Length: 287
Image: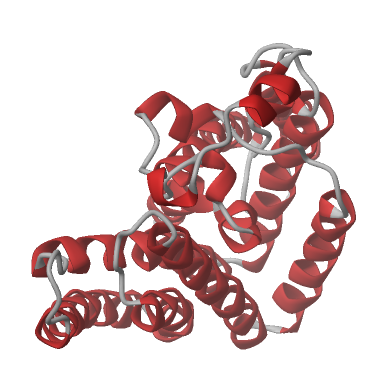
């Protein structure tokens, strides 16, 4: 998601240098900062997005297992990176467990939704066990509370893992349906990235992404690709236009601040709500 710190006042660099903040004083940002502030989008993110799109297409065509492996790698990286971001602000998630949560849910989805539920239950238990072990091992003052550690661990890896798992479930149900979802989500990300970078307000990027989804939804309704007729195309496309930007905001809420979201999380944030909603709607539509 394109975030809003690209829109800094012209004098911000001098004021920042005049009052440096020690890393010890860092704390989780306010809810507003967590959702809309972030770093400049310099770097190869656009190229990486294009590579991700084509790799995902090839994996989907190759089968459910390669696609599950791809999403497992990205979701696992997202869990590790998000847990690391929380550790930088003195929270203590169990980083390895957070990474495993994200990495294990997509392969479970390749076997079926029942296995996703089983892994989800095991994830909760594993987070609690790891939190208890961490609390017992921390003898010094101020050690984290067990439930807090378990909660931050789940927060770091569970939601991205579920988003990735539902994408695999969609592909397992209908390959063309997954490819249509991939195209629509990617269209949102392209519009958000191109317009949102350097925009003066935080809503310009999401609005551009929604407009890009609307254009492709119109094409989908005309050509009626895959299982979708004209009316269904607008229903599914409208859902993505609403869920993708909400997913990016949810992704920002999973980390201490929007700038703390790593590449893994930013690759999956638009899927966090669109993936589960698409899977549920597709199952109902196909009967």
